[in-house]
Image 1 (cartoon, rainbow, N blue to C red):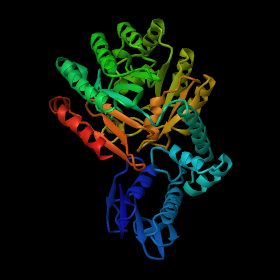
Image 2 (image 1 turned 135 degrees about the horizontal axis):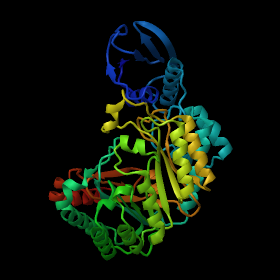
Image 3 (image 1 turned 45 degrees about the vertical axis):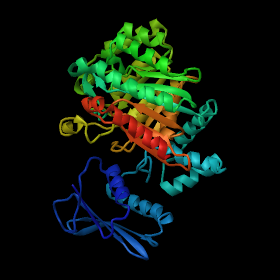
Image 4 (image 1 turned 45 degrees about the horizontal axis):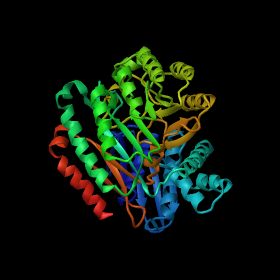
Length: 479
């Protein structure tokens, strides 16, 4: 447990975020006693007009200390200087350096884009951001690579006049240990699946009318696991989509067929016949022992079977999600996973760093298993992606990733997922339908993003579908 003392509640979110970046999953508690022995250490921040002091105490003794000059009300310059000072104190105390330095946001590529759009050259951007945020050279160059590919891809579509549609199917065969997404066991909800789809289609009808003068650019069906639907249910859903939308400008349709234990050849044929351009078959690991620990409910053999069946029906763009740092996995298991994926030769690979999410069951295993990605794991996964002829094309971060790493999407040329870029960079409206779905609507007068959240509970979503539509309507009128 970590004690926190602040004489003013300035930058509390940033302080807590940086503490947790160094000391993942620790509990932070406000206190006033620098000598208390119930805390691992106490961080004291004293804001003053001329300077701010940052100190770390153990049992009343100062172990690390830093003074940051300047008025704490100078929010632009001072905030960066304060975070650097805080980082330096925590880094010295913990004997750690963070790959992303003082950054706590989820989209570091936005910083690169901003600099490029202001006319800065790559040679100027790296030292500037390194000094300002203490980002490692490795992560800065990774971000630059991603941004260059993102910008090139976005030039090929009508971003301004377009929008994307997300459809949430919040059902799974089982709930994975690390998951915090809206997801419900399919077996318990089979009797109301059609009621749920009817509600989704009611939202779809509203979206098609509201956006009749805009171009639908990308369609992403996620979850949950959309392939928990039966083949007939999926076919019916695509028939409804074809009825309500003009697909002439759509550059991609992606379906998360993430769980191999939900995939059949019949369902894959439905996806292919519906014109789906890209699917994900997500092993997360190619080690059966780990799959059992994390509650995936499928075997490596099922991963292989699903992959080969997708090829047989003609699907030529398959993504595979993997996670570095799963419980009990070392470099031996990591190497095995990526060697097996290399043999399959998918079109894209997403390398996730395990995140210790607040609502996941994974937290209960802290004492039983070691977990969390290492730099060696991440580097090896990236090297294997490059060996498969892939390059990084999108990147994002999550809170509570042990090691302060990131998630990177790699792809062969021409097989990138536009939707992933559009939602991460918030370049146009992402209209999301379904339980737990979150829409992002761009404001017309600036850079503001209006978020519209749907209810997560399945029954509530069905019963209150008209309210979900009103929420979207109000947001569209407000922008």
